[in-house]
Length: 98
Image 1 (cartoon, rainbow, N blue to C red):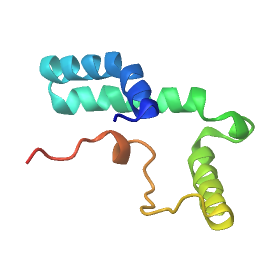
Image 2: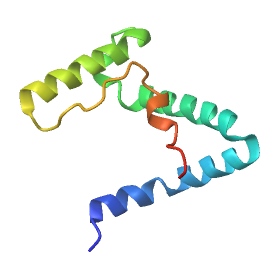
Image 3: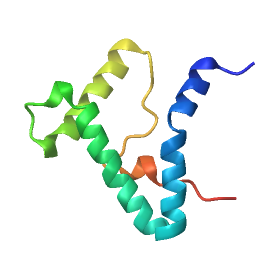
Image 4: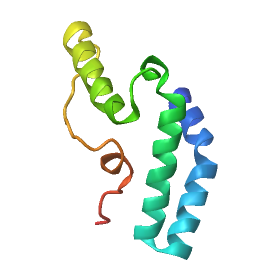
């Protein structure tokens, strides 16, 4: 039995995956990942910044990290397993193919 929430999320990103694969094929991995990283940063700034609108852009990610750490310690809903300083590339660079 497939998880319906997972399947819905997977279907919602199919178009983005096709764009990413085509960009990698045409532009090469390095250039494509640079563009994808910038696009994701713009998307994140537009969609995940509401509590941080009054904070200068360069201070938003550190504030977001502080908020996540506090939530993790107080709620115990999730645990932080990796704490990085880069808000983009740790997310979008794919793992090596084996």
